[in-house]
Length: 133
Image 1 (cartoon, rainbow, N blue to C red):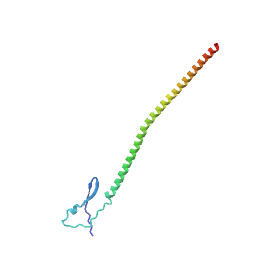
Image 2 (cartoon, helix red, strand yellow):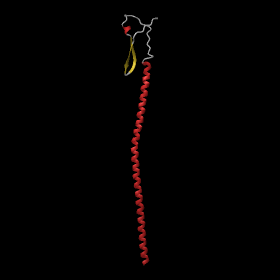
Image 3 (spheres, rainbow, N blue to C red):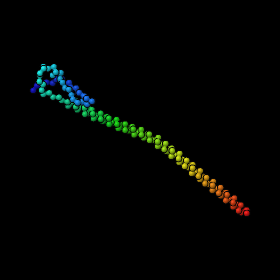
Image 4 (cartoon, one colour):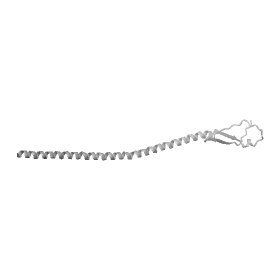
């Protein structure tokens, strides 16, 4: 059988961004005599987009996955930066409360000691009066 190689044009017919079917035609066959029967036509897509299409999809999915992971990482960093000022504010509030608690405790101690000294002074004056009588 005599095989003749002729140029073939392949175009993708798309709907909604997906390849549904292909239109295959040969300019040599279109210009041939009317009524001519063509048989034994084979189409080899092994080195064309049937193998590169899935590779492109895998490559795109890989790049998309990397971008998503980078965004997740950046989001976590931003959340940590957001939590850090809140934690610092909490520490400052805790320190302020601790200072106030220490100051209150020292005032209570001073007040109790002053009350005790006044009580002792009153007892001494009463003792002195009692001795004088």
